Image 1: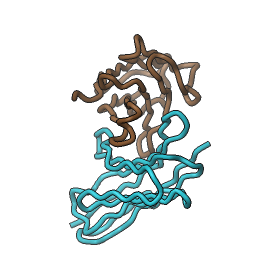
Image 2: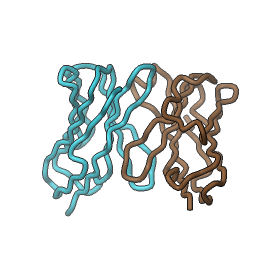
Image 3: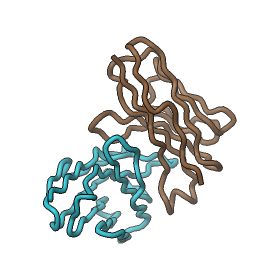
Image 4: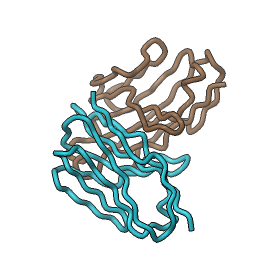
Length: 116
Length: 110
């Protein structure tokens, strides 16, 4: 089966600019996650969707970050305006409960964001 | 709030040696995962551990889980250079939320 697709792979922007990332999960996976991974750290959950509803966005900086999952499939994560500390890799992952008990969650290749 | 701690954070070892990475977590969970990440790459699932006493092995890697102690170990046997990577443990909290440890950067020298 196809994996989790993310685009773009790399993005360089100036601070105060806006940026958007796109994720297409594995077909049939109801749960979608966005994680932020700062260099040298473990991934941190930003937002979790179940179908097109938000399950957990407690660590999403809502003054500048927003995310949506239209029709319970693709998702976009937006940052506006970006700050230097937003430089990180943004990972999208998806899961289906019965699969996650056997195979874990599947991660995309990530988008590496550099804010200058 | 669930905390996941790994140690060591950095590990440099010689080929052929054995070593263990430890993962402690602070609250009860029914699932623990181990992932591998190569530089500039995404996360690759290695093991899923579901129950107390679970042990999984793949090649030179073996993972175990002690839910009573809230401890998982990843044991490396006779290390080879190809195993150099960063290893993460991650624990499920609540409705499938995955909480990661800080990662252990493993370097295996010839």
